[in-house]
Each structure stands twice: as C-alpha cells, then as structure tokens.
Amino acid sequence: MANIESAYHVLGLPYDAPPSQVRTRYRQLVRRYEPDLEPEQLFEDEPFLRIVRAFLVLDSPRRSEYTRQLRASRGAPVETPDLYTRLPRDSKLLLAAEAGVARRQYKAAAQLAKETLQENARNARAYALLGDILRLQGKYGESISMYNYAIQMEPDNRRYWQLMEETTALREGRRAPRSLEDETGRWHRPVQVWLMLGVTAVFIEASILLLQAGRGPALFFGLPAEMLAVAALDGILAGIALSATDLLNSYDDEMISYSVAAYGVQMAPVAVFTLLPGLVCFWVAIVFYAIVAYLDEHASIAIAMALFITALLTVAFAFIYPEVSLAFLIFGGNFIWAGFNAGWAIGSLRTSPWRAQE
Image (cartoon, rainbow, N blue to C red; front, side, top):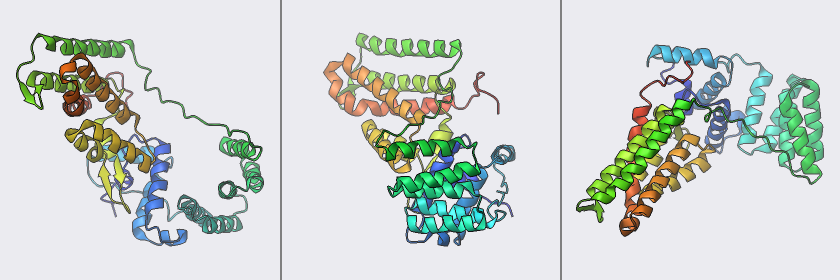
C-alpha cells in the first residue's frame, strides 16, 4: 500500500538534505520519541517504525531512485520501501542498540549490541558501538579493544581508525583529532555570479545613500516611509541575488520543507521560528533560530547567512542615519527581513544556468 507521507515528510527534511543531516534528524527523533520506552519497545511501536523506515530509505543507496520517483510523481503518493522488515535479526538488534545510545540508555544498548554479536560475531558496527558506549563511560582502554575488533572485521573502514585515534588521544590526555566535513563547493561559482552580486551590492549601497536627498514624513516610530520602502526593496534585491546564484539553497527546502521536531514526532516548518518572529522584531528571529539550531542539532548555513545579511543591512542603515539609528535598529530590520524572505522565495522560482542538473 502506498504511503501518503514520503520519507522526507516523515523526517521533516528537504530533498537535498546531506546524509549527515539525515542521521542527525533520525537520532534526534529517536531521542525525543516516548522517553519512557526501552530501546526494544520502540521498535514494537508502529508510529516509530514509520520513522525507522523513512531513515533506512534515506540512508541507503536506494535514496536516489526513491527521490527520483517522488519528483516524477508531482505530489502523487509514492510507496516507501519497507527495508526494516527485510533486515536480518542482527541488523534489527543493532538498530535498537543504536537507538539506546541516542537515548542515553547505555546499559540496554550494550546488552543489545552483545546480542547482535551473538547473532553475527563479525558485525563490525556492533563492536564499534560497544566502543562508543565504553568511551562515553570513560573506559578508554576497553573502548580501544572494541574498536580494534571492529577494525579487524572491516580494516578499510576509516571511521573506525579515526575513533581509535581519538580514544587513544583521550586516554593519553592529548587533544583528540578533529574531523572537519568538506564544504560542498558553495563558494565555487563562475565569474558572472560574483559580478551579479557585486552589482547588487553597489545598487543597495547607492540606494541607502540616495535617501539623504529626501526621506519624507515619519511613518513608523519616527522612521520615514521612503526609508522603510528602500529597506524592504534592498532586502528583496539581496534575497533574489543570493538565491538566484545558489549561495542560498531553495527557500522551500530551507524554510518550508525542513521542519523542526517538537515533542514526539510533531513538526513545524523553520519559517515559523524565523520568518514570523522576524516580522515582529528581527533580532528576536536570531535568538529563536539559535535556540532551534541548538535543540535541533542542525544549523543551516543558508539561514545563518540570511540572518547575517539582514543584520548587516540593518546596521548599515542605522550607521548612515544616526538621527533615527535607534528606531531603525529596533524596527527597521523587520522590513529588510520581510523583503529578504520575499526575494529569497522569488529567486528560488527559477533554475540557475550554473546549477547542476539532477
């Protein structure tokens, strides 16, 4: 039977969510789902299994074909493969063990990992998970032994070698090595992209300076109507330029499709926590998003950039016009933020010629 909700909708993720974001969201939902349940009990609950099935599809090689089917269906229901039912028993036990670690139920997780090894003594992930649990408990020597077993089972797995190095560094009192994910080439754009951004920046700066010629009567908390109109227009231009050149991801992906998990599995679009508060007071939107990013364990570069650009324009207006600086700092950012979101959405409607075709 076809599922009405896609795997992306179940996890509250956009189509272009990277694998690390898929795993982070899954762990987050696991941790928040019915905190009183034991790890094994989770996998007896059908609503939770919907989350597991969605995760398995998006964390597997079948994701690209599944996503292609979703895009081609244009909103029609597409069946989400039930990869969980097809898993062998040791893989199901390991999933439950990993859920226990995410929920900080380490004793139950360790027992499940040992049961996994009873089913399959060569399960490298089970050894590595035991190593993770022991490391979290400060038992570095035993943790290294488990990572050694994992490496023996899968000697080409670089992650296990890295975990071994980090745990060895911890045991010896040295600073653990850090692994940084490569930036996905967001800043590698053709010359015409940077030219377009440069022209936009010049136009925005000129519009701010031209206000000195005349700003008309005060309209909103002592702020002239022309000033607020130019602020909103500059926000629109900035949003269109950054979105159309792909320095910002699609507005729908970032602000609508990507949802924030509330208690249980309830979701709300990020726009609820950024766009709406920003219309009341822009600076509140920054605070709200900082809280959301902390609780959601994921910070969007695109949203952070949008907030930064809006803050920069707000400060620029206030600095150039000191006689209304305080009022603009408090309320002017609202108009820039509203315009920026509108421009971001408009810029996302087109397909840029330099965007790689999927």
